[in-house]
Picture 1 (tube, rainbow, N blue to C red):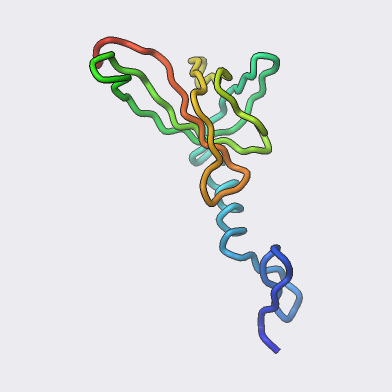
Picture 2: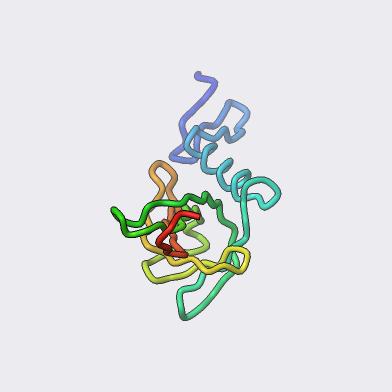
Length: 130
């Protein structure tokens, strides 16, 4: 008898019946527990669909990009949110980070992490780099 036996997608069960998570389950658990933790990496944002708003945790990375060749510059934020908080993020929705409004441009499911959305948000188009 093997020390581990497979039990559906929940992970592995040892001979004592203890659930041992597989790597994918461990990664998802740590992503939720560690990265969305407000004392570590997470930040609270207000996500608005236009019809409703909700305060949710998110992981945010900020960048300044040239908007288009010679057209100016724009602030871009990569925002990671849980699908359980926002099932269908879409273009035109907004998020507020510390009171500053950003506009959702694109959304895609994060590769390898089901239940996690990656949003590209923009604000503050300008002609010169600050």
